[in-house]
Each structure stands twice: as structure tokens, then as C-alpha cells.
Image (cartoon, rainbow, N blue to C red; front, side, top):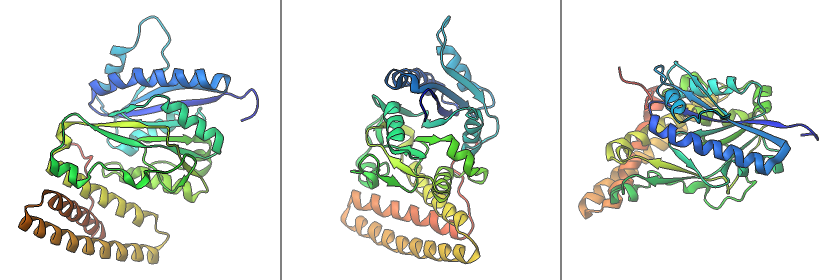
Length: 324
């Protein structure tokens, strides 16, 4: 950025029928925006966007209920009636058409102190086209030993990464995007992944393929608040299968041509069958030994295998499909 230019940054949070969560989160995001402006001075202006994916506007009304009277509040709400994460994220991209930077965060997360400033500072210091950071899980209820042992909410694969480390993909639950780079590459979230998930992996891999760099910021931490109904064995195994299914589908969608897709399909089939064999053995052995941890790991492997094999067969799991 040249001298005198002020970057416009928007924090976008998507919500669907979580009025209590969004009402609690938005004031915290406003405080993060104010903190960033204090630290960044004349170099940055920050605001907040709420994209309500409920056609009834329950989230937008919840934000209005906590909006202070008689003073400016840098919060905009829009209702996106089309179902699906991709549609809501694309609405955020359109709303940011006159902005330089867009930061995605989820409505069930709590940003840590200095979170937004850390993302922006890392972006400025590295010149990257995207910055992502850690997500830690906190629980409304203590998970049972089976859940803990299965590691269903572990995110250890990026533990220990230093700030500035280049990563290939990122989730949109803690992500800063340079919208100028996004617009140059002509990127948007794929509606075909709107109800299955994986749209963020697809998007960020496309950004990388277009020459963009995504870097890690250790200091930009958000906490994912997991409700009790997402700690059941049924939910966690379905979630695991859905994540594996969407990951395999993204790999197939990004494969450049029929031959490459055939190779991805073959690798996914081999991995799914191997995981099925290992998971079955772990589960059987755990039953003999009454091993809670072994059972959790085995059933998690079987769920991942199921998602992968369904993807190879062309079947799509839709964890975000709406009932009724």
C-alpha cells in the first residue's frame, strides 16, 4: 500500500438460526475492529458484515436487538435466502466488492485477544494473498472418554507452525483474504459444494493454483465452542464421513482432466479400502480388549473410509442439507 492509502477491511460472519450466538459474537467483532483501527492508525478501516442464511432473518433481527441506539456501529446485515455455505460466502464476496480485505470467521467461535490485528499485521508483513490461524476447540459439556480418545476435534496437523509459514489450503473459520487477488483470479465459492462442505478447501486451493500465497499466523487464535449435541457418537461419525467425502470430492473436482481424475479416484479407492481394513481390525481388537480408545479410533477410520468410498462411487453426503 502506498502512503495515504487506507485499506478497507470487512469481517464477515455467516449465521443460520443461531440468534444467541450471533448476538454475543458481533459486539466482540466490533471490539476487534476498533482494536485493529487503534493499532493500524490511518492505514486501515474495519467493519463487520453479518450474512444471515435464514430467509426469515432471525440472525439479522438478533443483531438489531443488540445494536446500540444513537451511535454509529460499523455493522451491516444482509439476508441471503439461497441455502448453503457457498451461497452465503459468495454473498459476502459481493458485499465486499468495494473493500480490499475480507476476513471470515464462524458464528460459533470466539476470537482471542488481538486476533484481527494479528491477521492484518501478518498480511502486511508477508505480502501474502491470504492469512489463516489456529482454531482451538472448547466444549459446552465435558466430552466422554470415547470422544476424547477419537480426537474428533483435534487439529494437530499444524501445531508448531511458525508465523509466515506458507500453507496450501485453509478453512474459512479463520481466514483473511486479499480481495484484490481474489477478483484478479476470478474466484468464487462453488455452489456444488454448498450443502456438502469442502467449498473452503476448493476455494483456497484454487487461490494457490492461481499464484496466491496463504500463510500461517500463530497469534491469530479463535476458539470453536462445541455444543453438547455435537459431542454424540452418531454426530461425530457422520461428521467424519462427511469431511472425508467432501475432501475426496474436492480432489476430484480440481483434477485437471479425465486421466488425472482417474488417478485421484484410484488413490482414493486404495486409501479408503486400506482405512476400512485397519478400522475393522482396530474395532474388533478393541471389542476383545474392552478398549475404549481403540474403538473410537477404529470407528473413526471406518467413518473416513465410508466417506471416501462413497465419493469414489459418485455419492455425495450432505451434512448441511436442511430438513423441511
